[in-house]
Length: 386
Image 1 (cartoon, helix red, strand yellow):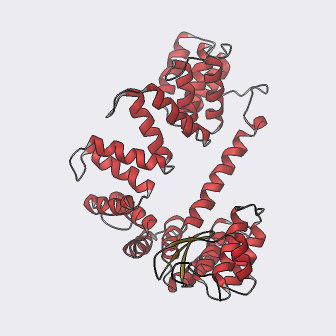
Image 2 (cartoon, one colour; image 1 turned 120 degrees about the vertical axis):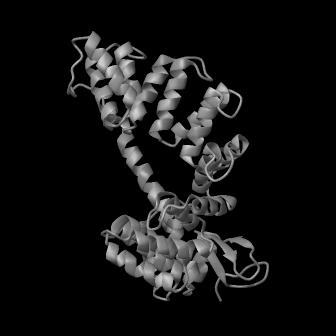
Image 3 (tube, one colour; image 1 turned 120 degrees about the horizontal axis):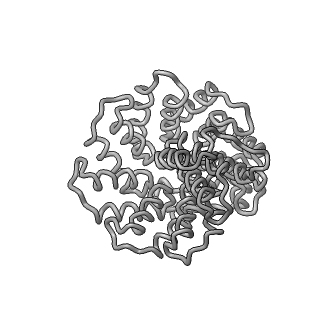
């Protein structure tokens, strides 16, 4: 019989993620537990089998994460031509999750799901063509357009990006605004952040600072890191809102807690300069060290400055030069200027990038591994929200 809506009794659902579904008949949001899904999955219901796969894939509801078992359940549902399961297998092949990465296989599974009208699969076809197929921007654009016109917010956001930068189509900033606004209206945080730029710069629409802050806030609350950092900066310097150091410190702390290098660097500077907190140079230095370990240019620059000026650590010109050089190579112009200043005033400052064997690195603390794991999890989450 399969899972049923407790409002209307329908068994026709759109699977959003894991046990979260929307009833096609009455539109009610319904959430099914692992036990409910497993009971029906064992009787061959493909929706339930896919939900069980999601629980195993994400390790939700007390279920131990197991990609292999997740794939087994997806395959059971896919053998019954269930589009959502076919799409998830395509995502596994696209990203090499429990299988060897195979873009051709990914396309094969995405095409199967797309043929059944699965808009997320259509969007994923656009992603594959844009990222893995040479000279396929036009095809990617067409897939994004199909999925966007069907109402999928991620495709609408990407379509806005294509129109703004002329990817697979001519540059059309009015069309970009149109699609960003559509996605932003239904709560897509990337679209909200992009739309804020239009209101901030007066592109297509008049400048509206209140709208910018509204969009930054909505996107930040939905987890968009760039919006979170932009909002924090606004409160730090009093741009478009009254200056509020305490609010800035809280927002930078949120960004840093995600493992974001820029957020860590900004939080470190708050501790150094006393922005929303009593200054503590030791804490500032530790955040700079973490930020630099992620490869963030600002973090490397501030760490180099800390070594040069003895902020939270002893003065060490060799380490200062090392981190400033890497920051400069990563595009941080202030690092190049400061490095030139050091070399002109301090003959002991080397122009190279020596890395003494005794330099502390973040590998010992697992920071780089943590960052890599975070990036991987972002990819996984992105795919299964598709």
